[in-house]
Each structure stands twice: as C-alpha cells, then as structure tokens.
Length: 104
Image (cartoon, rainbow, N blue to C red; front, side, top):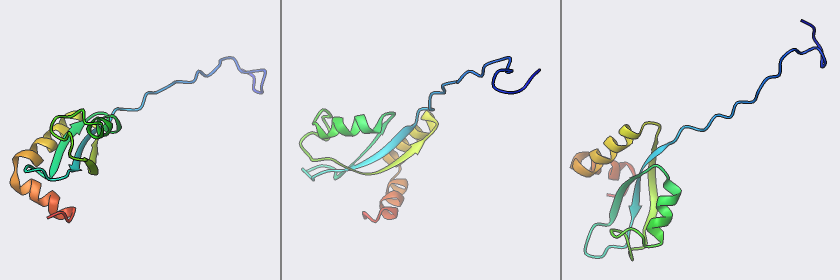
C-alpha cells in the first residue's frame, strides 16, 4: 500500500449520525386563576411544546400567560416519564423541587 494523496486505496465515507433524542420534564409558572400556579409537563420537543403553551393551544394553560421556569433533560424517555409522575404524584418530591427552586 502506498501513501500520499494519490496512493490511498480507499475513500473514507462520512457517516452522519443523528443526535439521540432528549426528553424533558418542565415546569411552567402561570397567572393564578383560581387553580394551580405551576404546571408540570413532559415533552420530547421542549421548544415546540413551550410555543404550544404560549399560543394557547394547551387547554390547561390557555389564557394564563405560562412561562417556562425550569426543565430537566433525560436521554431515556421512561426516566423522564417516571420523573414527571413522581413530581405530580408525590407531595414530598414536588415540595423538594419547589424548595430547591426557592419557589415555596
């Protein structure tokens, strides 16, 4: 095998690798309207989901001026879903998050 620019016997092909998808658990702060002040959600496309909330396309946050204040990113979908469920269903997990964010 020869070396140099003309002596290469094979051409290296560029491999395009798609980035692994991320999954997000997020917290929105909303204008209080007789209901909850915070909304906890899950999404695989955080930017798109935030726009849906801001445009009023999500019934729960429509007309309440939602603002993204916190999110956690996960490489595994099921870990993200488990975290969302834990925050929503366990008062102690919810309060620990609120305290860490200095919201309560």
